[in-house]
Image: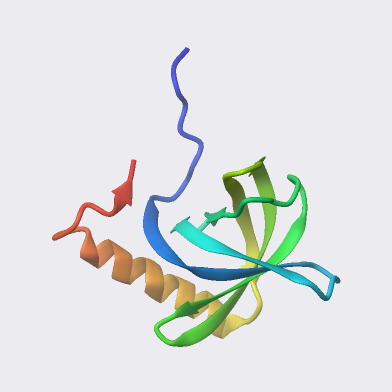
Length: 116
């Protein structure tokens, strides 16, 4: 059986601490953002949330806090979860995500950080 790539955007390694908050819940979980693209990310977390859970992700981009909305699309206990972005919290966060992706793309020339 051949593997079919469904992603619309290239993924980039970007390891940084991330706070994951379920919509309308006060508690949060902490994990590590493992990779990111314009469409989503993968969060390493021992006890990931079930697929279909709406979440808010908070992490640092160039010393600024960024908050993005998403929905879990995969959940692998003991490993982590794939999250599809559903929208930025505000225009500044969308701009920071775009800036981050451009910075990671620029690093590819000297460092093979793109994930195939």
